[in-house]
Amino acid sequence: MAFDHRGVQLRDEVLATVADLGHDLVDLGTDTATVRIDYPDKAREIGEAIKSGDAERGILVCGSGVGAAIAACKIAGIRAAICHDVYSAHQGVEHDDMNVLVLGGRIIGPALAMELVRVFVAARFTGEERHVRRLAKVKALETRYR
Image (cartoon, rainbow, N blue to C red; front, side, top):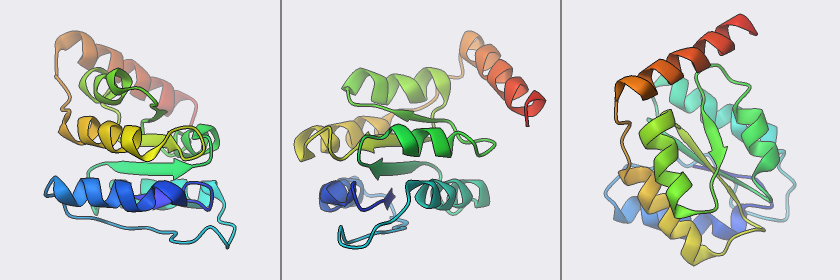
């Protein structure tokens, strides 16, 4: 999990939800809103944690979610998306093998954030042929335009 200074207001709820679900936490900070933290740095840290195997998936929280999602998707193998509704939070994993949930700390409140985290963590990629085929096309785009 990683938070910039605008996403830190959801920190306690996100960390507690993941811990309550029985998962080990990789806390990449920050824990304060008083020091400005640039979201691309947090996106890089979460991408590196996933690529190194230190984390299976990530949750990235900034002010709106937009900048963090853009930055995270620049890292090969990272499939990040802003999800402010329950359907997208699980469908993104099930169909698109999304590995980073991005939340806007200034957009949603703690109750919704906790529900989005629960469904994201519980979701699994279906592995259905149509989803595998589409994911292969996404990976081909990533490779071609690297």
